[in-house]
Length: 616
Image 1 (cartoon, rainbow, N blue to C red):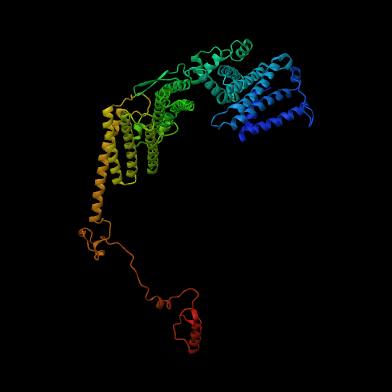
Image 2: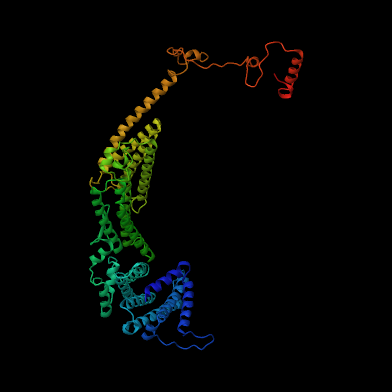
């Protein structure tokens, strides 16, 4: 019969482009068409007559009676949600007749759904399966829970939503669970959490544990149906329930931040922290294995830790927002504890983010100008047979630009830590963050200096290297004051190791001497080029019109041995020579003097040649 899919798909389709008013109008139209198909619609201007209740026999003959009950319940629910959405912006809240009307509509929908459950329970007559009965029971419990939520009857509300959650969780084990997951995350779980808070249930309990404790175990028939689908669902312990969600059997109860230990009172935060611890252990195993060697592979191993840390930060923020919405002041101990927890989990998340950037930078945080890391593995045969190729300058500069981008991202992350609650008042932490920032600024200046060296801009490279050396010295002084706490075996994070600082200091010391020497050599070459002309230039005999300020080059007076050069020649006698050159198609010049008549003809012909009668 697919009851859950019928309801959820209708809601999603209507609410995707409309609101509850649109959904209510669509349901009224669908309900009218359904009654037409069943031939029970009231005629126009006809007298209203009370409809007979549906029976198991009618439902087994025609499933339209099932849709009739579902559409009736959904229309009542949409009507209530429409009124609730209209009055949600009221300053005094929903009170008086509006609240009573909303409750009456929800109660009507719950009664229609419960009637459907009673009809389907007669499985021998209605032909319903156990899954159909469970889906109808979960839908009715969800509507009944919404009614009790508006009545502020928190314990019955918690019981109803717990029933719906347990049933949908059991059904998800044997059916496609995407629809059930949406119902649980968007509707049922938030209602259970709020009802549990109003019922004074501790926040340390997870939602599956709360639902299992509030589930009506006295209903033996329902318990039996649940056990058929998921035998261990109602028997799970707290640790097993947590393990099913976060992959860790034990969630931490406290968190430590800067020598302050805070108790974790929210179950979602505890589970997220347990997931982070599990992901951290897996990260250490991956980095310790020999299969992960390339920087991109090592950076990909950080993804699970970053996701778990982000979940912990989101859970903490959500808990703080809930308390603020409830009107809890900032001075409340719960808010203070959550603020400390928020700073701790965000610092941890940013720390892993910086560690991922450090891994992507390469060995020693990218301090070495090594070759570009390959993205694919090569066999030993290929590695020995092929000769190493010299990397072009453009490729080197491109890699240096990528490193600078990573350093900028790291520096932005360090600045974001300073904005966390309580960090501005911690002088020791601020000094440590400043030392870390100077370390990465030194690496950034070193990369930019190398790019200038590759483009033959030695003065710029020397100045940037000197700046990087000064930053590294200041960073080393600050770290020697506070001490580096990170061990050599732990994964890379925001903590800088003493070996990394010492390596960078020694490297920059050598780079500073090298760039200084290059600048001195370039200056000497430039001075020599300005004073003494190059040996391959023009000889002194050709530059007598110039005054040599630095003295004449007596070693290059003339070119010897002499070279054959082209000299300019002015064509003075070309016109005269034209008359004595025999060209093809031209009559030869007569040796004897022409006769007067011939001479006259030749003159007449010569007058016709050329432009405007002029010619040779």
